[in-house]
Length: 93
Length: 93
Image (cartoon, each protein chain N blue to C red):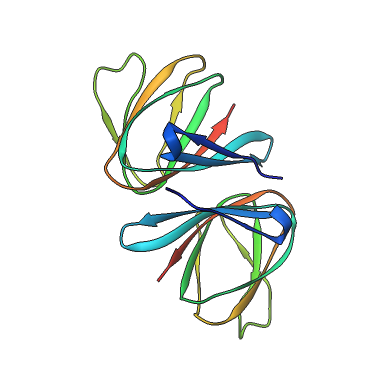
């Protein structure tokens, strides 16, 4: 019913579901540095833990606050760093 | 690294992780009526979707808002209803 996705040798796992009319994933990532690719516009929200992101066309890393949402354009790559287990919600637009 | 828990024939799935010093799960549930049991105090937060809960010693169902947290005592049972895919965070205290 809900697919489980696994990336980076299990350091990132997510559950696929529907949030209103959007495809969505709810995920956890272990401490580490990651680069993710997007196919669609993504609305990412930090739920628990901590996260710094470097978005395409931005020069600096940005710390994300709990419940803060940031938007990533489609067909690009973005970088994420965290120092602890971190939970997020991602909506695919 | 992150265990996947599955309940109610896969209608509820969750990922186990650590949130600061707490054990935590990040989960999704499909539309349905559920009864959950607790071993510890649980702090449940609704992340996406909709949820009504009936807590022990309460006579009425209560609708939970997005980002609202409710507390469930240890060693009890509580009931949850939802009409759509719903995402939650649960901290075990």
